[in-house]
Length: 254
Image (cartoon, one colour):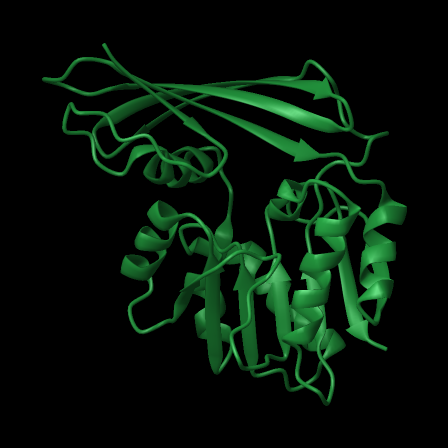
C-alpha cells in the first residue's frame, strides 16, 4: 500500500501512478456524496441578482477545482476564480477553458479590476487564523466590488456553539473505476476545528493507496464575521441554512 500525507491545501502525489492526488479526490468524494454544484450555483446566482439586479460579473474566491465556477460562468457575462492551491487551480483551469483562474491568497490579492459580486463558498473562509486575517480577507473582497455597488457572499464554517466535537464522517464512493473510502475525525483545538481525513483508494491492478490530510479551521463567532463585514464597509446580513447547513453571510456596499 502506498502512503502519502498532505496538510492544509497541499496535495499528496504518490508514486503508484494515481494522478490528481487529494485535489482530484475532492471532486469524486463530494460529488459522490451528492453535493449538487449546479443547484448551489443557481441558488447563488439568484441571491446575487436579488441584491444587485443586473449583476454581470463575479469572482469566486477559493474556487477550488472550479465546480461552482463551471456553472457560474454560464450565469454571468464574466466569471473568474481565485485559488491558492496550485493543484486545485490546475484542475479548475482544465475544467473551465477560457475562464480566468487567478493564483492568489484571499488575504492579500489585488487583481486590478472589480466585480458585481465576490463569493467565497464551502467554508474556505475558515482557514483564516484570527480576526486580523478575517478582516483582511473581507477588506480584499470589498475592494474588488464595483464602485457603483456590489455584494459579497461568504459561506462560513461552523460557529463555536454549532460545532460538534468528536464528529466522525465516513463515506464510500465508486467512480472512474475506483472505490474510495473517506473517514474524517473532527475535534476541538483551542478556538478551531482540527479535522484529520484519511482516504483509501482501490482500483483493479494496483495496490491500495492511502492518502491523508489535516486541516485547522477557525471557529469564528457570528459576531466576528459581522465585524469583519462592517469594517470592510459592507452592510451585512446572515441567512440560516445555506448549501451545507452552516448559513450564508451577504454584505452589500453600504
